Image (cartoon, rainbow, N blue to C red; front, side, top):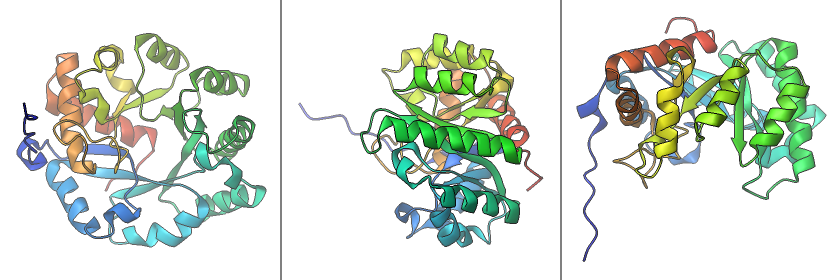
Length: 276
């Protein structure tokens, strides 16, 4: 028996009102070099008015930020990914600080955190890089975009011991259940939901999506990764977040347009974004 053919629904057929925000994307990478302008145009047509592009290190930021010179709707995040913890040197931290001082489109430090799934970087090095970056963010008065994979216990211990309860922090790409969501919410932080909330097996994540208060919820793609159904397995892009938004709204029993705009407002507030 053959596999059922997946209908790749055009996201513009499911577009939502202008005001949506993709809070975490990687549009500077080579995956978009052939059609970046088309991707940005589709995002706007689908209802996205702001995109947070995440640069994974000061070298990438310096080399690639110019790709968005003609797109003021794109704001920037900058940090050293935990899998690249060895690159979080004193010079890199100084370069990140200098970049924030010079570029007003930089709105948050990240993604930074811990990743115990991959073995690219020793845990001790990751912890050192994570601690250094969150304290740099606090020193600069900037929010933190957190990456956490298979490391929730250590991440929470570090954030608590460093005094980050109540500090502006976004738990990027949240994929957990209600108990984990409750622990994050109890610390005053925000959660961002990605495409996997649409996957049939992710009932715990959909229950968590329904549990999160509306004013603490953001949406993201993490593109080019984690495409939602019905585009799972293909390259992700910001326009596809309309499918994520509709799945989250269904899980919450809410109107998709209202949820979309609420999550967009939350992102604008969290990143202190000026009007586009």
